[in-house]
Amino acid sequence: MIPQKYAHILFAFFLSGLMSLIVTAIATLRTSGPVDGFVGIWLGAWAPSWLVAFPAVLVVAPITRRIVAALTR
Image (tube, rainbow, N blue to C red; front, side):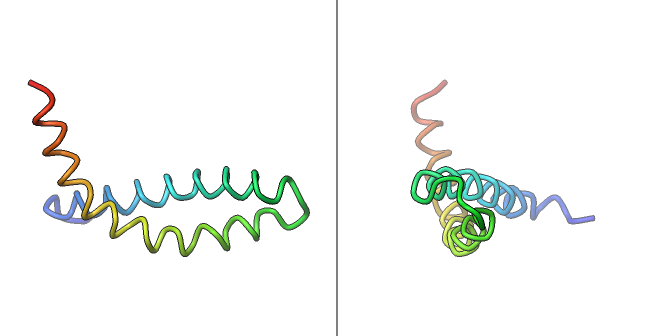
């Protein structure tokens, strides 16, 4: 079991993975259409996207939390 103090990192890991998976699926489908080998093309686009998305979420999430806190009660 992972200690609670690492929950924000695990959250960012899964959030970035799932969001980049969805976004690259849409972008790949729009670009190539439902062609043979679509899944391979999609996963080829997703892997490097996730490498960017994970650290981006780690950096952007605290900024986003502060913005949301400032805009809400």
